[in-house]
Image (cartoon, rainbow, N blue to C red):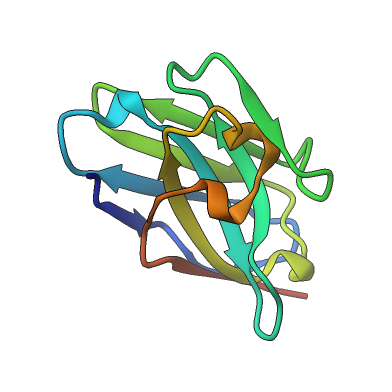
Length: 125
């Protein structure tokens, strides 16, 4: 099992940047592909980005491609999400998730087994 704790959310103006972190417990972090999802009020979870076990492959939703960057540091048991050029529609609770599924890159919510509690990102216009 792995436990995930996100941090780094906050209030930022449109056009600004934030860096989210997700710290994982356990010694098998590198055994998991990782993803970031977000959920705005009244909406379903939306896939944001995913990264492979080694970090060699990354995937993004069309809505964030070119603005967000996912990365990981397996030595630090941490995955990051750099958010640039933020828009008000990016406001949501952002959660990281872990999976051993080979279909992690498809962004399916139910492909992920472990979830953090989420961190709020609010972008003002």
